[in-house]
Image (tube, rainbow, N blue to C red; front, side, top):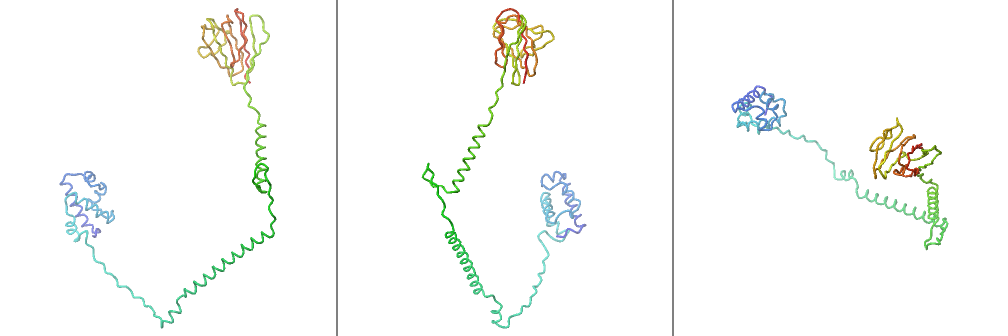
Length: 307
């Protein structure tokens, strides 16, 4: 099929386009029904057959014609004088006969032919010679080692019935040294230092208690446990951020069973005004602060140091 004739291409394209218009179908409709891309349908209806490979062009034309109900063989015959299946016969060129010179005699052929049997014999003899040479070499090496080598010492392990050779003894000694190093290293490792909180009461005037608190913890956690209803305050201008409520100079009242905590992360001094010491227990990082037992009003000063 010769699709290089542009005039024939345009005539075939016009027939396809006219049938599509008569069926009142758009290019998109045809593309959706046939699976042929819309751009290819437009190119076919414009007669631009040179954009396609011959194989795909024939496939698209056959599918498009079948969808429109057109016999493509008739259109090919009308516009190209051909059908899809017809191809021009090709002339088969006669093979060129190469002149081959014939040997003058059977003796000449036998002369040029390789002597396979003789070659095989030579290769076999060479292989046997190589194997024999290797065997002699290894045998001589074994005999030489047996004559010149000293007998290996055997050491009897008192704990077992197994004889240990020199190599095994050295290996065991090496393992023993390594075990000793590991044990020594483990013994030399310092014990982990546990955090400590110390509380010391300093000399103080009447109605006051001053405590020096030193801790290696990351924070000093103050815990106040109330065993009755009492008021708690601090000096004016000081704010202590307890978890439930900030403590200021105005103070607050707590009841039996209440607990207040606060974490101090920097060294500082705290002041607590406690009217009823016997109703409050104070602890820092779980260590009890020895408050006085008198029920009268006291001012407690905590000088906290975070190391």
